[in-house]
Amino acid sequence: MKYQLEYDKCLFSGEEIDYQEKKEYLVGISLWVRFSDIFITSEILQEQGVSINGEMLYLGSLVTVSYNSKTKEFTFLKNPDYKGTYEIVGYHKTVTPEKGFAVLDDVAITKEEFEFILSKYGELFDDDSSLQNLAYGTHTVEE
Image (cartoon, rainbow, N blue to C red; front, side, top):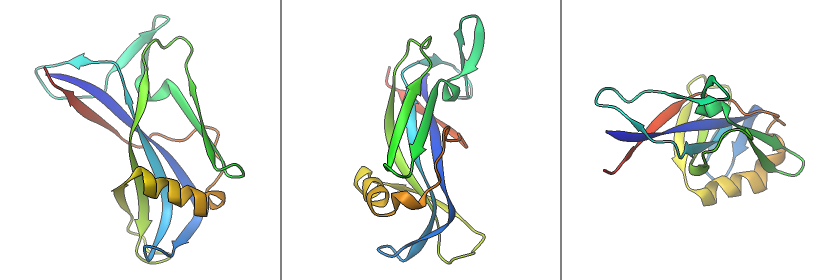
């Protein structure tokens, strides 16, 4: 089986954001980034590394994503020694139904909703020079 790896890049707010249009509270949003490298296995799909200058590195570490709350823009910086490519393949929001509620829900959203959240609430998210990866996933490549 052939597959590619995807990593989330998570942006958080210091406090819950009252997402009035959906009657919920935003805690964060994330981008899902898929890398072009193709891995082959007959077993369990798992995280893999690639060799960069003789060092094994996880793909998620090869693209640094930062966020500026003043401009409401993301910046992508790819390791110059990484020869592969990447693309954004998904958008998520992390929400809670009530302010201060301990249970969070990660929900897939459209690019349009993601852009709306940034345009209306973008200044309420924290500046971040390197968004965290909290999860990875796999994408099966057709043979």
